[in-house]
Image 1: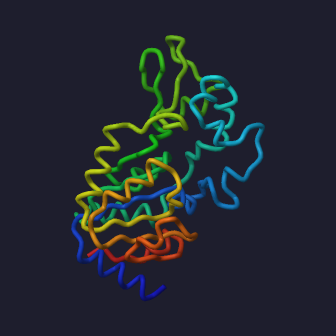
Image 2 (image 1 turned 60 degrees about the vertical axis):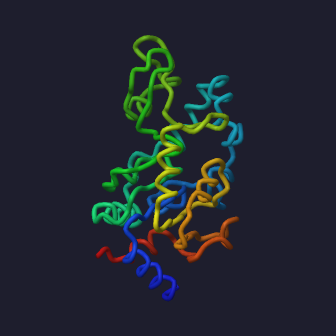
Length: 241
């Protein structure tokens, strides 16, 4: 991997508008489970499959069951940023990274110091009443029992994009614009199997497409540089200069 690491360092040194596109694998090194690995959520046993529980129709039909799973598996509030999160924030502060585009909902990029983060699938840290729109912090969800209810009587829903829901148009537009204008695109910690998020890769027009993932992805043959290693290890070794 030493040769690939040197190329990555050189490309980062030469770039001024890097965009990072990441998925669940970025946060597994912070102790947050991913979905599709051997130990991921999709391989654990519940009364319903996780992909069904995390759908809008399930939320509407069985909100109590949804929140039982959600509090147990989706709220990892003690997790801390790892070397990948911290290095990306450092690159942004140095004026080399344009933005982070993430499929994660944990807020760890912002916790590490990143400012321009496009959260494709929302965030557990934002929650609103479905009736009156009143905002609630994540602690309200965590500490409530059953279905969290607003002071107006409405159900409080996380600002998380569930299956069967559309991505936020403003977030999607911002992510597409940044990727299209990037001089380097680093993809890390994602299987590139979730659409429409994975399709954003097609908007990159440059010749420094870096793919960092421990397991193969459908886009491996499209990468200009492929590194099969943990994302924290790879980015943590980068020098910002």
